[in-house]
Image (tube, rainbow over all chains, first blue to last red; front, top):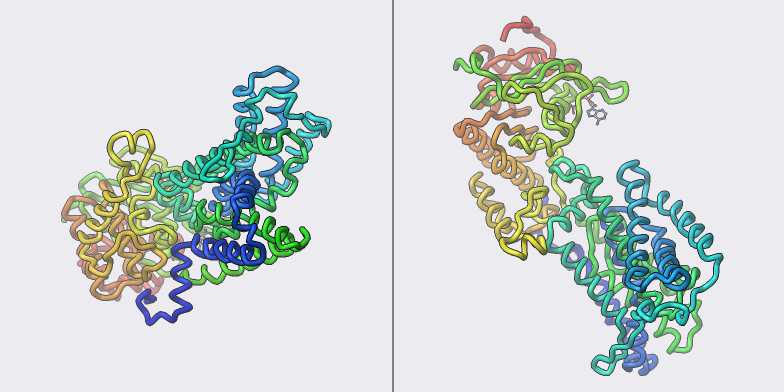
Length: 331
Length: 261
Ligand SMILES: Nc1ncnc2c1ncn2[C@@H]1O[C@H](COP(=O)(O)OP(=O)(O)O)[C@@H](O)[C@H]1O
Ligand SMILES: [Mg+2]
């Protein structure tokens, strides 16, 4: 029989180590890119650039948490940006035009995120439709509803109660320029990281993504786990929507056009396997930081935005290729 | 033994299961009595795995009835059978390779920490799960597994099979079913599994064992259900028939008078 104790070549040992610790490769990559970008332009390591990095990463990092959960179950969510924008615009409209108090409007935004997740989750878990197709469909549906509600116009921050944009409130910290939104996203990471790592629900999410039939035979209701994952992801999108309003100082239907690609990129670069069952949110936050550090680092190095797009594209393919290689460990 | 006078623990009648046009089971009866080891033998494709999946809620039969202790039951999902104390080692082993041994042992019945950490934060008691997993493995006599935090994908096929058997033995309280549990095991480990089956029987638990290993079957079984082409070809005992006769019935070279057991 196969045994792990067989004379292991260095490559095999590395493969095993990365397989056990999927967050290590994104960590190495982040450290390397920070080093290289700092060499190219020392301004990269300054508090200003670091603050900008964190501010710009927050929303995508939050969306990527929901995306991570869904990808861990072997699914994918193309509707992530559309769901967040629907939540964002609904709460902004309620707060600006219908006089709803900010806390209620924010709660409705989160609720709408949850309902979007519920719809995706029900279609995936009950009707057993492929997540790719389901969320491709709801991407259009959510976008269309947003346009019907808003007519495509932006709600300015000054037209909303202050609490609607409170996520942008600055929090100076160790010379860095942080804000409430970053803090909230940090809390989301803590909560989901805890749930994945330390609760039965987390074990079941991994089991369902890794070996759904085994999970079923072990007595787990696979469809319940899937449904819960999509709903939790939707709630996180709703929270991200509020962070987005604070970050932009306004609610715009075009707020995060590339959110689905950006979040999937963060997850994949973060070492979570598109096949499900392997990865986690530590990798995802590193992945989101890597993507954003490329944006800032390349700009500081004097390169145009297309180089960032090119670099991210190459990174994603490299990350998926690495995942394939690492997964070969499995017997 | 005069087991046949007792009421069966589990009794299946007329179980039929089709997969599209393939008939997996064509009206099978099966009884298992308290404290007995019932072996199921049969050629590949005879419907052995399908049969035990129909007994444990892993598959829902198209037709037929199940009685547990004389009461009609219907298992729509594996959890339904587990709730009744029926534990199964499936041929696929039903383990998540990415999770560690303890998580797999307790998959679907995780232990939470005592106090608010468990009740409010729903935090797992990993230590307890690891300790109990190790205890279950040691109970079986398996010495090749040391670390319950090890991921299952790093284990050999035999080690995985041992874990699956340990899991079923630890949690079964009514009936334990094992589908070819020694297929990937060496001589020593196979012997341990047979010992574990005897220990379950000594606790009064009935065991259903599917095996291709005829010497094992003749060594341990009280009765032998012979499955052939989706039907029950007959039920024999190790003393009523020898292995050659059993195999002859299994392959159709010989028939058994039906109705007689
Ligand atoms: N999920 C399935 N889909 C289609 N056919 C199946 C399925 N499971 C079993 N069968 C068929 O049912 C028959 C019995 O299979 P099985 O119970 O696995 O046999 P055994 O365990 O005795 O080798 C075989 O013809 C097999 O191909
Ligand atoms: Mg079989």
